[in-house]
Image 1 (cartoon, rainbow, N blue to C red):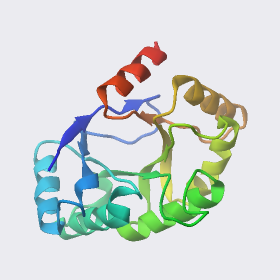
Image 2 (image 1 turned 180 degrees about the vertical axis):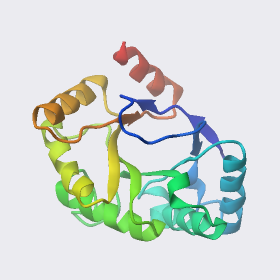
Image 3 (image 1 turned 90 degrees about the vertical axis):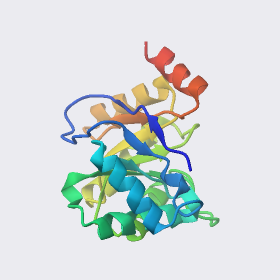
Length: 199
């Protein structure tokens, strides 16, 4: 089992989501290596040490990780408002519309993730793509998900500083919700690349 604390860089402080401590990771092990009982023990240990942000993704264990995390949180009896939950959208299946960052997949993939998590919404949805389509398409693609209340905020996953800057500029110009956080790879070399690009 691996448990890694990763840095999540917040782009500005106006979003109103309070995270304590570090992100609890690696929920990708839920379903591959951990069952619900073990996941509950791990999540409770995190909460006991001040962690309230739990990350997941539609691709982890082919969706089983979301099911296990959702069931564990439910069985622990935690108030939904006490935890910050994120998920990543990119590859949710083998069908032609089950992958990528099209408006269709963002909305439908988020709905499927929420069903697996047994939650009404997630706090952050990551557009997890190392090479996303042109950023002019990103903010508007995330708007339906935001307006429908499926997710409160959205962020990027492994985007370059230039791609993030362009996406935020387009969102600002069109008065849309832009990305508020970047989730770099946990690989040290990739994380250093993001930090260097940002300066």
